[in-house]
Length: 352
Ligand code: ATP
Ligand code: MG
Image (tube, rainbow, N blue to C red):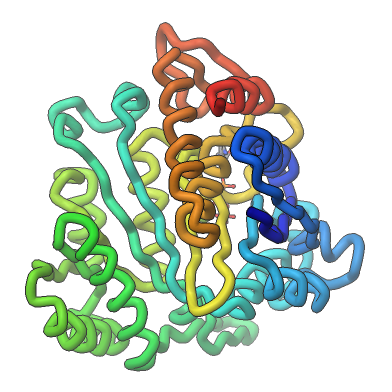
């Protein structure tokens, strides 16, 4: 089959990990006989440098017309002097908004092979950790009204019923295909927006009688996630809490470098690793490409209908980990240290 894929390299380690991703796509083409038409689009810092805007119109046009979008990461110290809508991050938020991808799906699975990379003591991770974070992505405090005066600044957290209803529905649908449990995380003891969140989630839950719904405050949720990670299945939460909890979940399962994400809405899906542009290791062949490669799995399964191919990539990643190869971020004693390119070579070799 033939697919059009928009690819955004981005900044920092973006070009390195996207190079890995494209090589995986090329190998899938070769083994399964598909055709991926890869069309490069600019976003964030590279778009500011080349086209003078963090989110050029041509990028939105390209992405909207494609079957899926693969994104590295944007931002870095080079653009630190810029403000608000001129910043690289504004490009990323703008793209998510333009594509209407309100549901950010972040699976955090502890691979058997990475148990020693988890900072949790083994008694806490003896059970299978397989969490799916469903984070609201196009609303909340990241998109609310902002202001800055000389000695005061503010950001508004605002959600309407429809925004909450559709993300809650995504989480409950997901739970139906998993273990039928949703933990909704909010701060309803303090925030009005969280009170409405809880109310609407309760309403949506009525249509999913088989799903067990539990509510947790964010402070307690953050604590329970490290105390009893295996108790979570689907976590439903807002934009900012989801941002924070998914970094926490990534540490529990080994490294921020291995977690993929899918951002879904009514149209095109956007796929990116959960980490940022990691300027501290950019250009050094140190970045873990697994988060990006697993994002391609999610793309295959969610947007392209290539289930078998997606599973194959996942198996290839596990096989390489089983053989003891690690990038620096997941390295422990007795493993073999490899760089971004070598890790990619090894994974590609397993796709046959
Ligand atoms: P953002 O605001 O874009 O989310 P961030 O400030 O949260 O970015 P990251 O870029 O995610 O930061 O980096 C956080 C830390 O994790 C850095 O030390 C970085 O080197 C490391 N890191 C991020 N991605 C990877 C990766 N793929 N492989 C190895 N280490 C990584
Ligand atoms: Mg971050």
